[in-house]
Image (cartoon, rainbow, N blue to C red; front, top):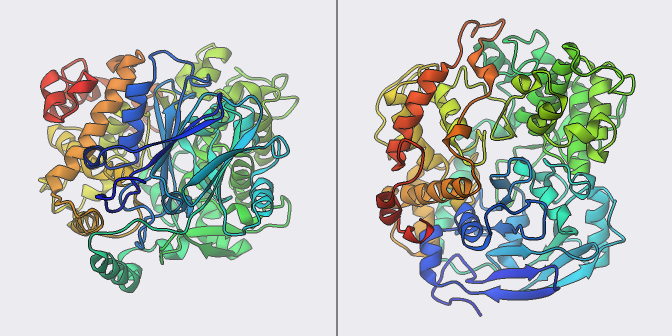
Length: 619
């Protein structure tokens, strides 16, 4: 029953062949866990070893992997998350997303460190895991139901209100290429279309119930770290007050806030879509995740003009900007409703909002007309039209069927220069952080395996006034402007990126204000393995390199390491007016970044670096 020498893990990975209805358990050796840790490490290793190049992401050959990390399920704030990965149906590249809440901890307590889902069920099913046991159950009666309805139906059917769920809505069922997987109704694994992969397998949900936490090598240290955070979090972070988004007005002033499909640089009505305004106008309750006192998640209830069910949570910064300023919408009720639709039906708020903003600019330029929109005036600022098109995307109806492919594919169908208006990298729409302000982030966007991802790259604005205190483990010692793109900025992107991406392997929350040294201490305390900053950073670098190898195998080369055309054009207004990303400078810094990662000038990992990272098998 697993590897008894492991602490923090069960030593068991569940494998489910949906085509055959066959369930088995893998028990990897301890060195597998030490080398890859969890999350992205487990996912990318499995995809590299087990997928054939060129498979259809929505075909039965793709594999969908849910993974935890060494800290998952431990009595530690930030330890409730899980990763989900597969070949992305949105990008055709390596795909991965993370979700918070309680589901990841419950998977660990249910006796498994990861789940590998293969094949395709002949009809809708759900997977039920309980205390080390697993079974597939028929789910035709759940197909077509909304997320919350499905969640409560499963809890009733399983006669346990403590059952945790990961569910697809109609977005995943209809194979919207940016469909998400919603955990416990309000926690989304949103990016890269993992919900579409789940839908392609006829898998409606995974329900969990577990009661046993794996052992820890030094539980007293974990207890002390948890007590320290409980006493100090209010002085270390403001997220418990408003969640993310409380700096939306500041982002507007500095030029970081996307406006009208990343075209403009100032949104006069930004205060109307701020968390402060939403709280004042509608009120909200705050809730949180497993073992965490920060409670940074909103629940928003609105009665009119659009009913917003608080059970689906409330919009954070990315959603406020995507459906607010990027679409030119200043009605906070409409933004909250858009968020609710996305969680109710399971689609990514970032890609959905950005793709609609793209469509609005196409409409403005006459590339899309009212004939395409069933008479709707899909103009910037038209909240009703935005919500109508969002519902069409979920159902794959009308213009929504085109936009459900994502902005890159939609632009290719629309033609007439529409591709220049699609703001994405490798097919993944940009998050709500502008690379013209954060040029190191832009470098990261351009090279990152999944496409544009803000959670795993340098936030350049952190370096404007000096090096943050918790960067002590990094050899970056000087302040630099956020708009700078230089060799010293590349060095900061490289070193900071290895720490930022580490959470994808530990499967740990970015928002819990532990220092890097405390995080290292937590890994040692749980696993009993001696750790160092170097060892942890190398774990991240190993995964970065494997994800690059996966993309190269799929034909995604350095030619795809580029920012959208819009980033080479200055914003038309605001504080950042006149500032753009220089494509020639970006290409020069990319080559330097490749070298730091141990890749050649074509962006191909060298044999020496593969050997140094102990992944020669992947070459």
